[in-house]
Length: 260
Image 1 (tube, rainbow, N blue to C red):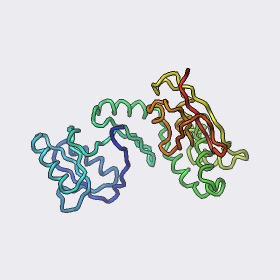
Image 2: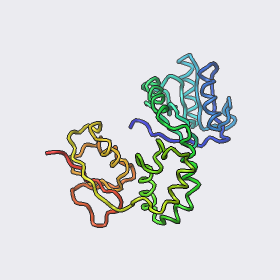
Image 3: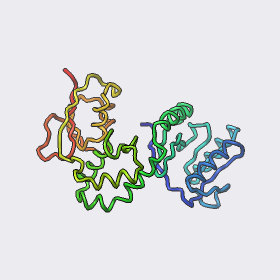
């Protein structure tokens, strides 16, 4: 990972835009969509700046000056001068999916956005909003946060009641209400799964193995497990070198080893 992806709360916040023309206007539209307030000088104490100047010397000078003032700077079409880059965006508010290439290819990020956008339901945001509204009920049903997370993860799996690519064909709020009203809730029992790697390439993982990695609570792995494989696991999942599953392990534990 070459950049840290983050989502900024810009509601009402000043954001500096320097330059004119379509590039500057495009950045201004993006800031406005996110709730930010456009300013044209540093008097408004902005923390972010977009520089859309065609002349490279002017752009370089402006970026250096703004950075010296403590601002994070994006220089349009000049990734080497950027403190941050703007991704291609799929907007299913409150769900936002951002695709970046660390400035390597905006065209590639756009192509990926177009492909993924066609796969995602237009009402995906309703599912997120419904889950947010159900937080109190979820905490009552599963007081333990790990059990609660596992229940939600199970419900969001492909073909499950809250599958985000379908949610049973129902609107998100209807699907969540039906799921919570069901007499038999999702299975949150602890279990262990084994992944025997056939190569060091994460693209050789099966769909099921990739799903396990993305949801595992504990990853027990051999010392020679490739870092690229481990990077597919949840960032907050515990990791342990070895091959034995702890007796007190909860949730999904993965045991990973290389094929002989």
